[in-house]
Image (cartoon, rainbow, N blue to C red; front, side):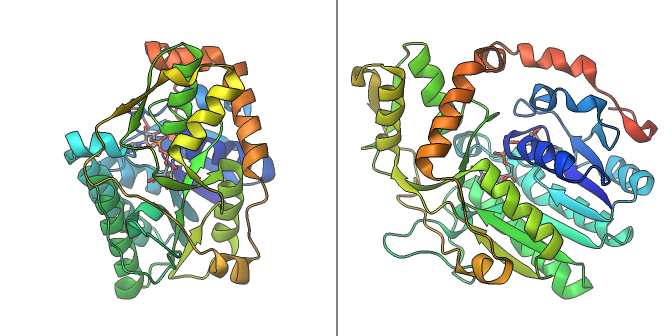
Length: 340
Ligand SMILES: NC(=O)c1ccc[n+]([C@@H]2O[C@H](COP(=O)([O-])OP(=O)(O)OC[C@H]3O[C@@H](n4cnc5c(N)ncnc54)[C@H](O)[C@@H]3O)[C@@H](O)[C@H]2O)c1
């Protein structure tokens, strides 16, 4: 099987590639990534030696590049992780989000259709549903996104389903809750708190910090995506929730305690506009249809995550100084494509 993975140098994509390359040594895997500030080849270091894995620097919004990639690689399956993913950035500069998260998906769908891809998996998010005070969102709940990020992802979900209904493109969508684990860029909540705490810097908390998120250890999400790639029903959407709801402030306190740092580092700042109060997903569909459920408890995932960031101080430091970009020298391109 030939699998095209987009955005594989980011947090979830790189964890997924590590998992997938190991699990399927006979699959041919091509990772394409634009290497934005969030794309880090260091996340995949060591994989260059794998014969079943290749990397090409390319932009999913560039139709010429994508046609070349599809024509040369001829993927059976496409798994689209590529996205602008930081909510705060989407508020200050929404354009890149509309371009990559919506138009880029359109480019991939057109190529998938043209080149006869047999499975297109779109990696979406629970944020498309918006906030819920009580209860849990199901896959058929109304979409009510609050940020330009979540709106661009919701629009892409609509487009993916339209290609299924109009052209019969074999698509499946996953909507996962907040992931945490190794290789997450430290602008995101958990690694940012760890980084600031380790360096004795203030930890900004939006509003009262009582926003609730449903945390999933990234490896659990990778297992779910793998199942959806293999067995997900075409034209279906699957929620992938960790079932571990925690208020942001609770997590900050847990990190400070683990690192032996004072609560005085917490600094309440003005709340983010349109900040969703609570996310919660029902996972009964994926459990019933595919037999998936999260198997890493929050305590165990949290401990693994803390251990990883403490052990990988250099990785963390490189993301801050920009030194991770020196890994760009290691670009390599299979298929004879250039990285322009
Ligand atoms: N992190 C989470 O908690 C979470 C939760 C639910 C869903 N998601 C979704 O999962 C996917 C991956 O999220 P992540 O946290 O790994 O994001 P990330 O920001 O860490 O990684 C995104 C990757 O996409 C690449 N990219 C960006 N624009 C591109 C373009 N135009 N062409 C090619 N590559 C491009 C970046 O270089 C980066 O490597 C996203 O689609 C996101 O919406 C994330």
